View: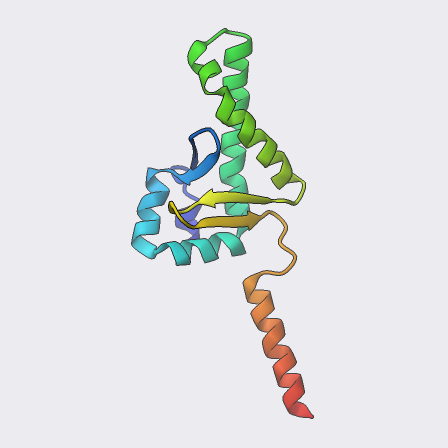
Length: 135
């Protein structure tokens, strides 16, 4: 499953100038595996999200260049959404959270450098429980 999420065709799109949403390929995977499974994997593997965001950042740089240097009106039209994305992307780079709208009502918040992941929290809770049983 993780390798499927690393596929080059899987990723995110910008919708309504502010929302990051799954592209068609990612939406298909979410439909196959469920949003909960995909959400858990992405929370535990933020490098996957990092790759998707880096791809969007590269698209931003190309569109910005096309807009400013080549006066491409289509690229200029798309800039507003990318400018909002860039602010959020800079926050991500600095250790902040990014919001991905996996579905319309439930955003997924992912951090590039999570302090504690779900798995490590579960393991530490199990460890503390086993220590308490010793006494």
